[in-house]
Length: 258
Image 1: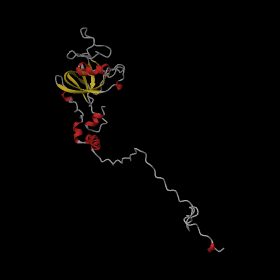
Image 2: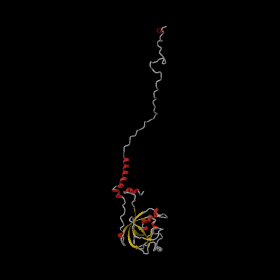
Image 3: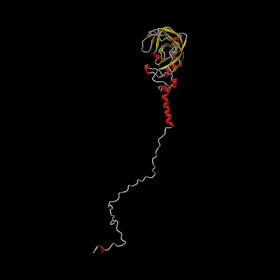
Image 4: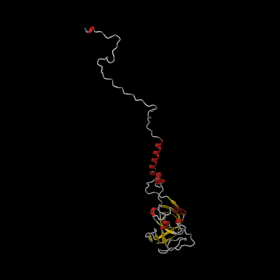
């Protein structure tokens, strides 16, 4: 039977998908399409923050830093800074005259400084008459009067001039300081040094008095000063002392005291 004589496909009968072939088509399955990620419910996209612009707080901080840096070096800062005291007017230190003394000391000086001389000045005298003889105590005097009538040697701030001062620790300012910071058994270098400014009058002078600059020191006369003036305080106050490491300016001075 020839090919032309073979019966044809039944009409209405479609080829199955497996039988239908397209010429030139590949038999491999098509590549799988990527699955789209499903965002969970309630998801919110991240908020992109804008770059902050230099504003109020930054400018205030910059102004403060600039002020702290420039003010100490400015003329205004130098004018506000406590200045060193003028030199002591030693030429004006005469019996009967008045003057202002600035003295640097620590509370240990209350017990450590002493002089020896055999004369009184307005009822004030040294703790000793001589190196070996103590000045007799007045039986009517109180047991503790902060050495109101005792003369002691001191050095002026900051030109280091020798002067004898009577009853310095009995003045209210010094008595308060002694009460706040009693020396006890502490060494002088362990105590805070401070400066007092006193208005005084000069009651007399001593010739080559013997001096003691510490509880364990010996008696010695000052080799560079034969006559030493005796001052009696009329009033005293504590004053600030500028800090040496501070280059200048009120801000620097305040920071060094914190």
